[in-house]
Image 1 (cartoon, rainbow, N blue to C red):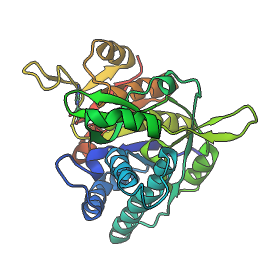
Image 2: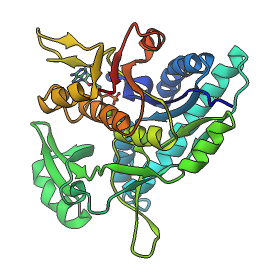
Image 3: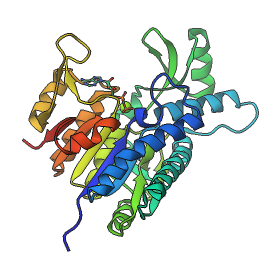
Length: 316
Ligand code: ADP
Ligand code: MG
């Protein structure tokens, strides 16, 4: 039997917590329900679907909760927070999709899979973390935070001092066979939420957690590779990736080959904290044998699947 087309769809921050919104749970549910239209679209076109999502604003909020309640309850390490959020956000996305499918008469099952993601314990980002997380602090409080909490703190350009954590590159998806098995059975899977929980295999062969966060775009590419998806769909706040973004010389991109993508990335068109990891994810997925990556907004997904919107990254 010919396998159905398989797609990994990565929901960006915009799909759940758009910039400028407080990001309370009511808003998160509302936005998530709206963005499920993109998933329905894929189902209608006969795709097997694996969903993944970011967790940036949610991790930031969770760290503030840890900060503010330190004198009342034991602190939660970052690895546990990421795991908690995979559950909480997975529940939200799962239920929104279930309800939308109910209303549309689509009879499919959804499962959220708590996903440990393998990283290299010697990843350079573990010794030199650069990923900002959580609240801002005044410079005078920094030595105390470094000495007593063991944090690494850096200045976030003109905005104050923040904790930085490692963001190691994802290498593999621990429950990849479970995910593939569920997708083979027609189940829609939500996996590697927020990039997944970073773990490595120690000298005993045990899985050991790392207090770090994995970039969700890079994790999506590894997930897509590990579940043999043909396509990776990255949904974000813009319709297309662009050269000279946000300048009078902006050029929106319809398609790029991996080679062109690599060149534009090296030339600095795609910043590290936003478009950069999406382009890198596209390069990685296609270099690993994927056939196509589309970057677009939730609103433009139908047009993008028809080749009329979005930025497509293709093999050379
Ligand atoms: P997500 O939450 O989906 O990961 P990010 O904010 O991390 O979203 O990254 C997407 C954002 O990157 C876009 O909304 C846009 O503002 C910004 N961006 C930066 N450089 C570019 C570029 N070259 N082309 C398009 N968008 C860009
Ligand atoms: Mg992002």
